[in-house]
Length: 537
Image 1 (cartoon, helix red, strand yellow):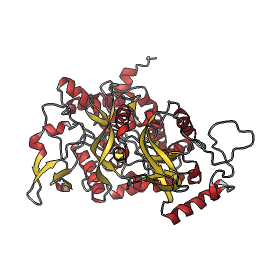
Image 2 (cartoon, rainbow, N blue to C red):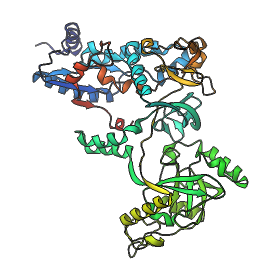
Image 3 (cartoon, one colour):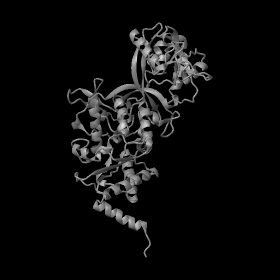
Image 4 (cartoon, rainbow, N blue to C red):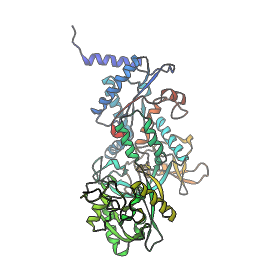
């Protein structure tokens, strides 16, 4: 009996599978289909890690099983190949990211084929391939045409060492996840996608998904729908009003101070002369913190008084306006009415800075805690006294609406998606700037490819590396003949990975991102395996 020689036997059959296209996806649409999708990997220089084959093995078992049961199985693989590591390597060595990426892709492919997974390699895709990112750019143009992609001045996580903006999830304890470099808050012009337009639809459609309930709860919390009221507080001795969103308008009589985010547009306007230095110092300290750090419940509350006061529309009382880092400009209106009697964070803050505390809900008998967050009748609340929370909310909203000082409102934690990066190795935006206005290029000009550059480093002043490619940047508007400047930010790595599951269906189709006839057959995906963290990232 011959001994089993894995190297010889496996190599023989892997070669046979490749040459004979054993796992090529059939095109017979009369048979039942089964689409098995893996989260495609970023091809790093280190090659596969143990987490890759862990998930890929599971999907491969199902793919083989379904084939044996008579299904047409689509089981593809590709590469999420734009990204920061290849660019950092280019900065250090001068090696073009394209060369590094191609080398890494070849290594990944060899490893996956050596394991013996049953992929249809004829459908292999790569997000850095111009034939692929042509359609990534085309999708962006469609979003731009419909007003779903726009430019805005946004306070962002800026990493000077990496020379780019980072998402909140890419910042850990004030440092970049990649490299551990310091990160500061800085206002910058950015491209943003209007995903908030779909908040309600995303939330409602979760009910139709056959997903684990824990995953759906992650997404529900990420979208974060809240029903409450928007209330306007007139600022004393100013024309401006301070608008807040609250889920507990019934507690307004207990609003003894206001808190606004350090980045709020009214900070400079309302801060008194004697408080300007203290406010400026505090804002500089906050710039070093990420939004996630600022939201940690266990951290000590900090803040500073602006010197200004707002008028409570319910009782006419003056309440001091503070700034504090636990309020984010990106959530709600960037301002809150603080009700320490009913909110633990507000209680801690009020206790620390010796601010007034008024309870507006009667605690249960025997309650000896601080802030009371339970149910009970309204107290210390004038015409709301004795009402239960639901009735008190309804009555105060009617009062505010009649007074022109507020209205019922819905708010979402979900923010519009920051969609630009100050990097070289990413999809160029198909946008030119003419007379200061953003304008889409023609789809006939796609793919818009990256220019060759001598240096991959950012300019150091926040301008991306592409700003150094002056011959590429300076162009002409084909419609008017006017001088134009190309957009020098690039898209994030997520751009190409948002729609790759569609391109697998018809990777050679040139009439759009996907052949609509094959899309009707293959979609939706039947099995998708990857890290749960990607449910919200």
